[in-house]
Length: 182
Image (cartoon, rainbow, N blue to C red; front, top):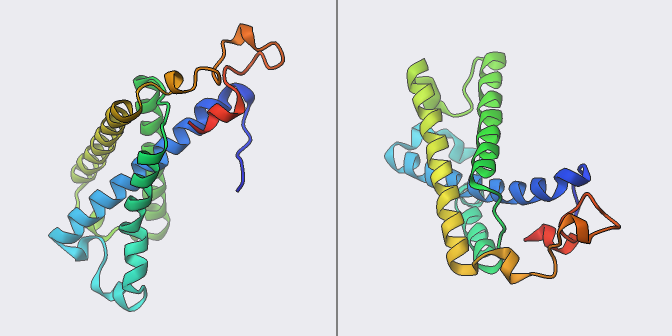
């Protein structure tokens, strides 16, 4: 397993938010893909892809990911950053992904998802906005469920978090490395 190296002052927030963002994206992908697929599969996964990708691979990408995400949520407490920070970082992640989709379209003339070709610019804006609202709702629900199941992560592990003044060796960190994974 690899570990991302970041500036010491940012590593705790970055790691926590990266884990949460990935979990939210997984849940959003599951909900969005299967909702649109059940409405009209040609919009997200055209029939001709069945010949290129086996059914099990489609489920690995769009179904089983939710199972592993839920297991991780159930078995592991998470310390969410402030709501403002969490939703802002989720918005930055969303804008980054949307920018990538738009950039690919500008370079190739093709949409990553066939349904985007059917939307007007206003429809695209509404779709991306509603996608963010859905992801933010998943974030808020996860925060609430995490608190309901685990309470405050700092209460679970009081010895792992220290104030800056109590850590003379590493004044830039507020938590020991073990806390970075909560």
